[in-house]
Length: 441
Image 1 (cartoon, rainbow, N blue to C red):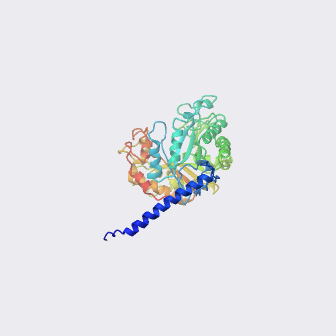
Image 2 (spheres, rainbow, N blue to C red):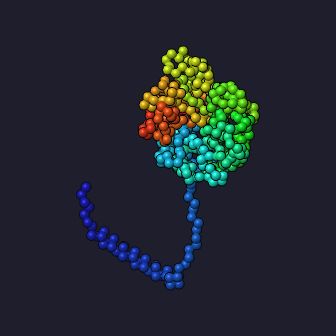
Image 3 (tube, one colour):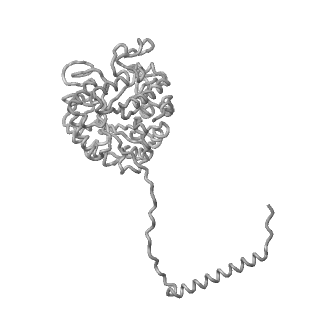
């Protein structure tokens, strides 16, 4: 295109109009100044600004309004909770890094944190919030990870007398109100940020219920009922989970492994315990029934009481030598479901499958020899899929993400390393990639 030729007449008209506008504006300003009292400012009437229209995204009903600042994701359409346990203890690295790994890399919505009461309230009324709890919760809120607190192990000041079996054992408080008070303090500290609370852990073992009376479903229900009332009074949206039982298949008295033996119960069969828990009215004080499934060399969908084939293709022959429902995840959940009879769903707060690390594993975990790292990932995905589709499980937590790197021992001595999704050096194992790629409807 050629440049336009200049037009002198247009230029003259433009200059004339500009000068006329300037002169007119000056006259108007002088006139306005004279009428308004020689420049005295006349206040203008104030007008409230029009409020901005804010479109609020509806929050899931499980998230109280006080936690609206947290970046929780939209739950899956199925309503199933996908979770994992992480070793988030003092000095264990950057919490934001691990939360990002859970939420964005693995695509999971929940994290289980075991809160050892004895470690954070060593002196009555003096809770160590800054040790790690505050930092973990701040990171979980910012990164959009729902938290399950599994509260275990009463501090020594809650016991009037020494424990019957003092070596490495945990126990509930003598006065159950102390536990209720501690959990109330947690809820006050993190309002709306605790999605679920598991009240105790494997209480069918002396290791966790080391009292003079021994393992007792009736006593546990008493503690659970008081704690449940406290939690619901603080936040009715929190999912209260009964302490997950350890699948044992045996009843022991006096001491393990002297089974059956005599004296106080120190180990109780999990199905028997659940029956007595139900008979004691325990279902009224739990929204979900906690369970643990310690994966073996059987696929998760197998029937542990009737294992497939003759076992000749396996190194570990336990399921064939001593068939029991707890050898496989599906048969264990189905056994509990028959006792619950549709009244409650289960929350599997710990499940996993061990795979050797550098070809090593503890000898008591012989079934790990039959699970290579690829099969570990396949079993974990199949377990998640089956639990969601079963409509018997509300949420499930894989064990574990990072115990191998955070304080884990040699793989031939520490079974936690075998279950981890990352190596002791921090690299993802094949199971990590399998969970990351797994659809989570």
